[in-house]
Length: 120
Image (cartoon, rainbow, N blue to C red; front, side, top):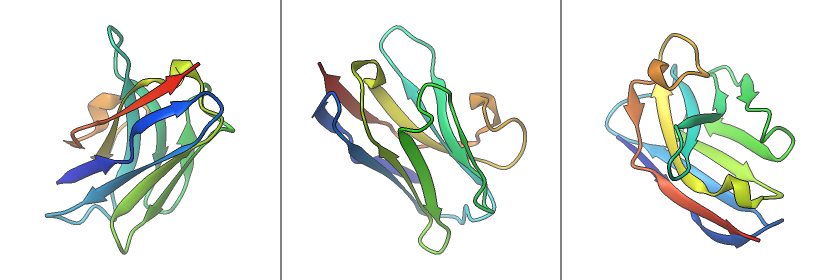
């Protein structure tokens, strides 16, 4: 029901835009988030956006990443600029209805993940 795309290989300092398309149900009133998981590490919060448009970012990506959503098209994007090697991870989009949107446990639906690799 959530399909993430847009990952790839990019050099440090470059940009990528991830997209998450929803299907099968409406997520217009859900908060939507992006998480990432690097090899051997826990899945961590990256960014989230409420249905009214309020955005939240991890300190590590603040000022470099921008999350946006189109409720009519049920798409959530993550624009990633000034990428660093430490941004390398599998990125997941997710949707939740309640709870702490910084916590992965608050999300009910997850996409399959898209790999982002940043070379130095």
